[in-house]
Image (cartoon, rainbow, N blue to C red; front, side, top):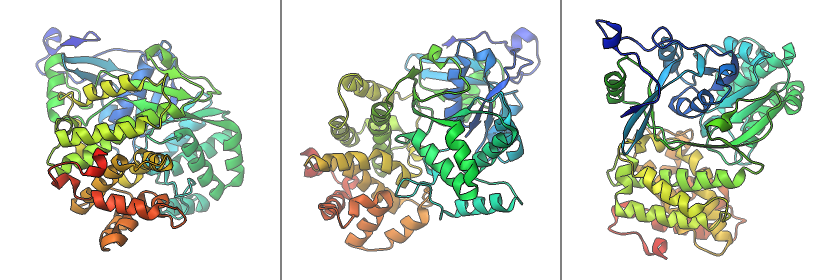
Length: 484
């Protein structure tokens, strides 16, 4: 075990009980808030906050982080003055580091505080980890103005009688406050697993703003830059055993540690009109074209995760490492990677090395990355992870069977799961109530209407392909279509 920062232990301080992590225990200067983050969770703390902590000018860049659905993370982190421990868990052991870049942890429902910080002239960057489903995009790539929570937020914004409840609504409300105070330009940095995620964030925010106030939408277009990113660091949920490990190794109690693999990657593309931290000091890369890096990560890492999540759980596994050790799941992942790699540019992406590194990372049994966590919001995730590869393969005259198998596994999982966690759970339930070919068509349409579009020459062939792959993970071997 190694420690990256000196720790104050209970024994050294003479305390009768283990002290609580906080700035009184580990004194550190508090940086001014210049970054506002929406989506305070484990990944943000292991990634964007970690990168900011390691920036050469970290003393100038404090983060105010707001929770999403629940206030719990903010409440516990605030009791520790924003400090928390990152546990890097590798094959050789654990290392521990206190991260101090979050200087304010706030309940996301405190929209007045969010608006005040976004409006503050010193705020230069807004980062987002609000999950793929939170952008509420319709099948045409624009904001779904008919989504119930979007309708509710628009009613609140229009009436002025209440504050919006969704991350998009809260951010639009806060950008209106910045416009009113003349706060100046800033950057919105999307860190969710979406292709062209900066463009997605722009469409979602300007779409909501335009439906409320066209002047605000025009101001956002002129004053807010949208940065696209590819983010990568496996970060499983923290367990009680992790809390105990930190206390034993470090000599203090931390109620908010985060466990992550040693690997980390952040690729960004876009402008920062009001400045940014020197994230490159921590290894971040700034590129002109983000799409190849996004697709490499979305297809190879996230796609394999989804495939393992559904296939693995159907075969009784609970973690990524367990599922990867199953020859049937491992073979399906390799076949899907072959299809994805055939549709990625060679050279700078170093795809063979990337695949080899993924196998090593996935096989790290000391990182308990639970499949149930990955399986959430499948109808949204598969649009970015399976559908593009399947369509690209079909366009080249190939079957796309490995990508289709991911969708078939999701269908089988959805059919077997109780209490499915998905933004389209009601639609999925209705589709499952149909029979045979019509059920398959309905479920495929939820993932991507293109797959069953009557105008598509092979729409029926895709339906037949997916239908033929149903039940693969109760069979003794991968079907012939996937081996071909």
